[in-house]
Length: 268
Image (cartoon, rainbow, N blue to C red; front, top):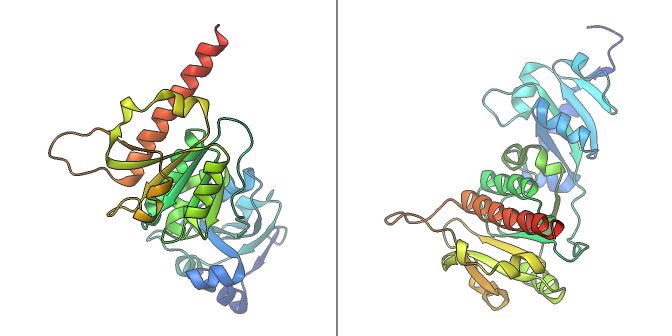
C-alpha cells in the first residue's frame, strides 16, 4: 500500500461497530447509516451531506475526500454491503433527519408517504420528488426505513438533495400543513382522473401529495384531512399501478403544469 494515501486500515473492533449499522436497530441507536457505491458516496460528498468516514478497497480513489478514508478488504466490503456484487466503496453518514417544518413560499409541494412498505418504492418516490421540484418528503410510520440501503440506493443522490423528514404522527403533520394553506390530495384508484384535476389547486396554493401503502392505499384515519382524490387513468383490466410509478406520473403532471404556468405568466 502507498504510505502517502490518506487512509487507515480497518480494525476488527471498528468493523464490528460498522456491522451494527447493517441493522435498523443499530442505525437507530447510533444515528448513523451506511451508503454503498462509488457514485452514491460521491453524490453525498457533492451535496455536503454529513459523511463522517469513507470505507474503500481502493483508498487512492478518495485522495481529495474531505473526510477520513479507511481501507477495507473485499471480504469486509461484502459483509457490510447488502448487494450481491458490492463495488467496495461505502461511507458512514450521520442521520440528521429532523421533523418537518412547513416550507417557505406560496406554492410549495410536499410528498407524504403513508405506510409505503417497500424500501425500493420509498427510494424511487424520493428520486421523483427531487426530479420534479418537490420541496420535502414526509415519511410516516409504517413506511420503509429511510436509511435502509435499498432506500438510499433507489433514491440515488436525490436522497441528499431533497428535504426528507420522518413523521411520528402523520395526521397531525397533515393538519399542520392544511392549516398553513395546503391542499391535501391523495392518490387513489377511485379518485378523479389526473387530467381532470383542478389546475388552480396545483398552481395557486401549496399542495401535499399523499401516497399510501402498496396494497391498502391511504389509511382511513387520514380521510378527514383529504381534500381531493386523484387517480392515474390506466387501461381496462389492469388493477393498479405500482405506487412508485403512480407517484412519478402525478408529480411529473404537477411539475409540467406549474412550469407551463410560469412560462405563460412570464410572457404576459
